[in-house]
Length: 288
Image (cartoon, rainbow, N blue to C red; front, side):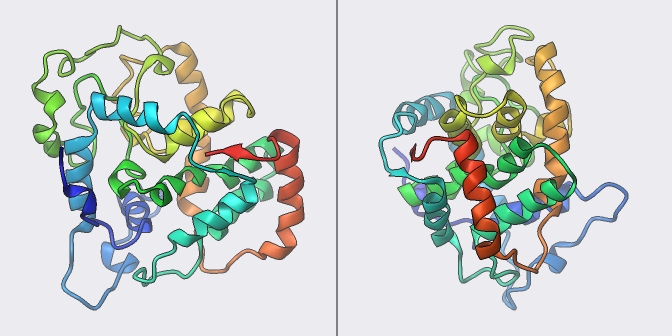
């Protein structure tokens, strides 16, 4: 049993997202420096690196299996989607110096950018919902088990994953069942048969898989799987259907990364539209 759950490697949950922006800048634009994103007026702390040390050490095949058995019972809470957004808003951290926008406003920025580009309403709803799984933090999960770049467990960790050197401390790296190219899987078995590291992506996918179109479900489930949609590190596990669906993941990714602006959406004006959209696709309440 480990005790590092109590460590808070990120000053706020958005630090990982800002780090992603640095690692994957908008095409044809120079990457921003870390100094452009954060200024705490304190000695620099590499909290993102510590986050990934914990994530890569403890995200094992057995850990993921245990989290799936626990959280995919969806017995923690039952809420309307809008109430869940209000619940998620309690994640706003006063230590974040860059923005006072809450989680709901980030979701609306993403979805409104998608809507402005004329995409189908289910795509707009996907933008609105995509980070709702972060409520895991409010059920006591440490940040390294909620956010972060995701990757398959049960097979060899790709060196294309950020901070891949930290996998040396992961027990699966020394386990012959899990440290080969294919591990517990078969070649090109399809991602539907692959267990991903535990976090908000997989949790929300499992919650919504009976309600949204398949492209939306791929966007939700794999939007943090940067080792694949940026580096193509796991082509050997994907089948032809995965490759076709990842075109949607690639289409969604810029909206998630680059829609963050300091001007907050008008929640009061937008709420009726989104309540109608939610009612079109989802039941009145969801089990979390």
